[in-house]
Amino acid sequence: MTAITTASREHPHRAAATRHRRGRGRKRAAGPLFVAPFLVLFLLLFLAPLGYAAYLSLFQDRLIGGATFVGLENYVTAVQDPLLIKGVARVAAFFVIQVPVMLLLALLFALALDSGVLRLARVVRLGVFVPYAVPSVVASLMWGYLYGPDYGPFAQLSKALHLPVPPFLSDGWMLGSLANVVTWEFVGYNMILLYAALRAIPQELYEAAAMDGAGAWRIAWSVKLPALRPALLLALVFSVIGSFQLFNEPNLLQRLAPDVIDSAYTANLYAYSLAFTSQQINYAAAVSFLLGVVIVIVSYAVLLTANRGRKP
Image (cartoon, rainbow, N blue to C red; front, side, top):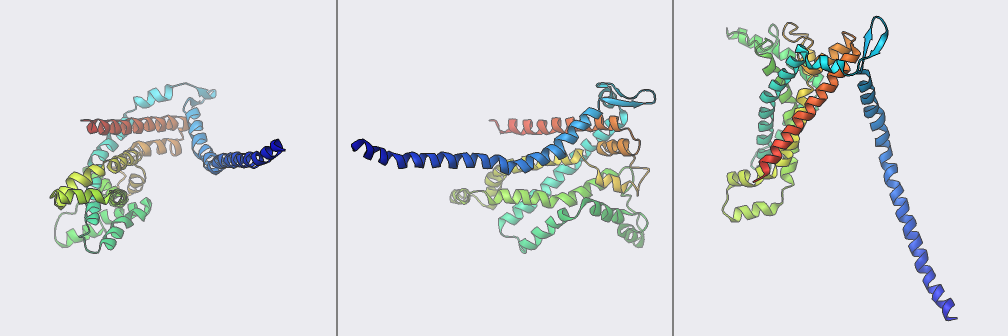
């Protein structure tokens, strides 16, 4: 009788343990099910095209024999291609010119908004961010009109004042003109990124700094800027990727300045021209992969430099 009673008491515990294990099993199965749509799309829209492009880069279309396997010959040719080298050097110069200005402006706006002393802060925040919501194609067309040497407003104003028309689309000014367009587009995005990081700083740090006698400038320098380091690093890496993928702006301004912006003005534009104008699909795939390698190397160099700077 005692054994039966003990068994009856243990049975509910075993049943509860069984239900618990089943519940954990269902939870474990739910995770992959939620992730599966992303993995399928990632495979179909990213990994599969990437693998196919890698496959194409190992072949060449020849008059006799058709598509022929050539191994790394396309990559060797690309490394020695003067047009590609000039395009990469040009976007590297663009990165050096444009990114510091853009991040500095974004940082100043973020600090001003976070200070709480800026009047009409919501209006300023929206006004700075709105250009990011404008598609890059529309932004390029708009600035192309503003840069116009004949009917653009800057040209009309200069003529009215009997001043020389600013050569925004000339060879010497073009890189700066492109940098201005990209800066106008992405200052707001980076401002929001930095502003969100500022809002995440614990209020206790500000209170402790104020108790130590730190003023607003000292708090910004000693508390806010060190706390913004990860967000600034993230913005810098995004800027590396965006700079070396520069395409829409030069592609559209090329119609206004065909003698300045050629088909190899940037590395990304060169790969596009090879694929869709010259029909050199295999060589374009190799150029694209090399451009991706350059982006990875530069991004890693930025991260490595930043991490070394954090060490005492």
